[in-house]
Length: 183
Image (cartoon, rainbow, N blue to C red):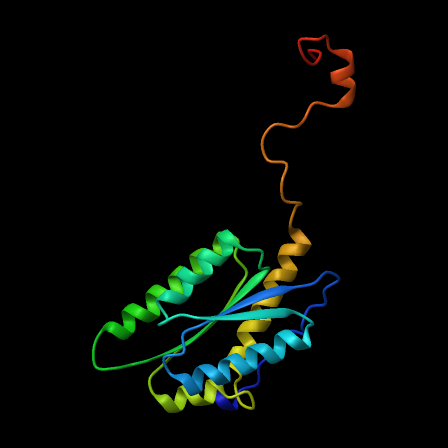
């Protein structure tokens, strides 16, 4: 049983510049979502990160909200939170697979996302995983986002400067009135 195993947890990264994280949560199961949020906020605050929270109707909307924010805002990373409990239809598989795949694709495209969308068989499993004193999957998702932010900062290159390089001052001076000197 997974509950009796021990797991190694990486220490939280340290940051020399502020970190801003967006928590995107689907509060369909409100009490579970609230515990996930509490865990995520606790870890983000421990790391000194600031955060904002937005709510969306369901787990399928979480990646879309993250994609919008990733394109149009200045967040360093994202925490995806929600809970999908197996029901009587195949909708469970659709929601689990599609939300997870969309989050993975966003991550491969450069978004730093910690995935804390629980996919469980029953409510009891969700409660244990969301509980901050137990498995704290919300906190784990926040820690994952922070680690990805740290890697992005470590390996990242300065943004901007895409396209042609501006002519150097020497080339402009050496050129005639029609433009820069030819090399």
